[in-house]
Image 1 (cartoon, rainbow, N blue to C red):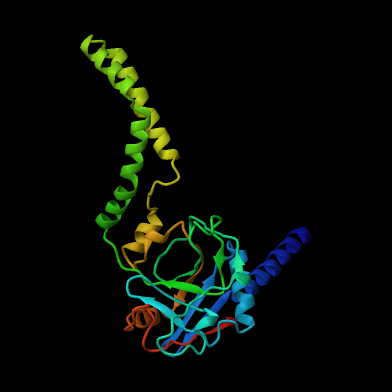
Image 2: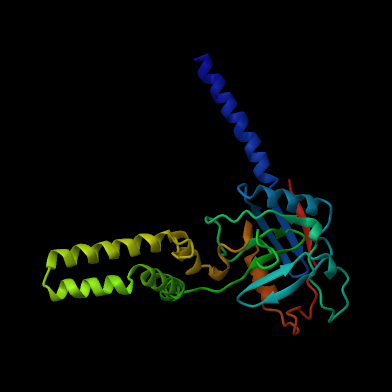
Length: 271
C-alpha cells in the first residue's frame, strides 16, 4: 500500500511540474488591432526555447507585422521593422538567430499556425529557420475536391516518372509478344509484377502528397495553406484571437505587402 501511495505521489508531483512547464509555453502576441495567444509545441524545443528567449529579452517588442497577404499569412518580428519610416522596405533576417529545422509531419499549415521563415533551399539546403521573425498562417478554406486536385497535381507527375522507369520499351515489347502468342499466364504474371513494382516505388517516393484525416478536417473547416507543408518549421498554434489574424490579413498594403497602417507587436510569455 505504501509503495502504491509513493508512486501515486510521484505521479501527481510530476504532473504538476509538467503543467507548470506547459503554462510557460503559452505566449501572447498583442497588437494595436487586438491580442492573440499561442501554444508552443514541445516537440520543436529548439524553436520553442529560442522564441521564448528572444521574447523575454524584448527582441520582438515594437516590431511590425510588415508582410501581410490576405488568404496567405501575416509575418512580423524583424528588428528592421522597428520604427521603420512609412514606405520603407523592411523585413531583413538576422543570421545570428538561426535554428536547425524541426519540420514534423504532424504539424501543418492550418489557420493560426505559428511558423519560422527561412532562406531558400539554394542558399539554405539544411532548411535552418530564422527565429528572429515569425509568420502566422491565414490561408483559406478548401473543399475536399480542391484537396484531391492538389494531391493529383503533385502525385501524377511522380507516378508518370516511376512508370516510365519501370515500364520500359523492352517490357512493353515482351508483353506484346506474350499477348500475340496467347500466353495468358505469362502475360498476367509479368504485368502484375510490373504493376507491383510501380506501386512500391511510387509509395516510397518522399515527394508524394497524401493529406491526413487531420489535415483534411482542418483545411476544410478553419482553412490554411497546405502548399507550405513540409517546407518550414511550425512551432506553435493559435488558441485565441483568430479574429485578430483576420483583421491584420485584411489590411490594405503597399507594393511590398507592408500594411499602410502599422501593426505593432509585443510578445509576452504567460507564466
